[in-house]
Length: 259
Figure 1 (cartoon, rainbow, N blue to C red):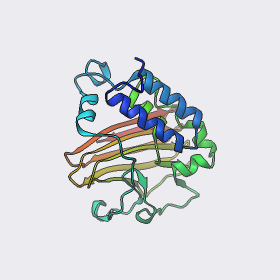
Figure 2: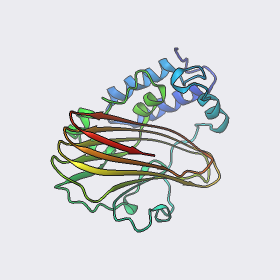
Figure 3: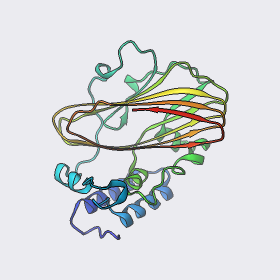
Figure 4: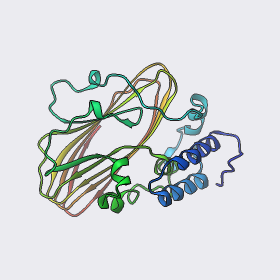
């Protein structure tokens, strides 16, 4: 399906939005352009699309969002959403933007590197360049293509070889919806061979306006490594979310997932 940018409808609105955001994104231009072209070709899924059967995504987005205003950072408190009494490496994103003031890293850098994905990409981190966009298929899924073209930030997590990370890593996604909010976030997690870690992602929101998040995580688990992956979806009823976690496992690796 080819999408004319002048065509009415939510797919055209999103395509126009992505095109505007591409102009302000200086990293990975070829990958982003390729993903955008695939979004244009695919269009948002229809009711009869097998992977989204009977889920009226385009209709829901068109009914509840304008997609006119740019994404904006939040300014509120994050601590009210933290898991009480849990000692953890804490990473906070508010409205899709990394909040350094609310985040804290306990584990030593010799064991684990936790960075903003936007910063790691701008610095041309070789691990990021090797894996980002290589595992989540943006050629057949429009929402993944949207994410690959238009993500603004996310977390890059790199666990070093043979390191057992005793302290959990908790990623808090918080949306402040005083007015319409949207966010497009990308995460890359790479665990080297014989490593072990626990990762928790928790979603919360406040405010009465509708908010939409498009989140894609690529998780690479090395040989004989182990990942325990928890997802806590605690958003309010005015939240709309597309979330893809794509695991790529090497020989003898283990992944335990809980939602």
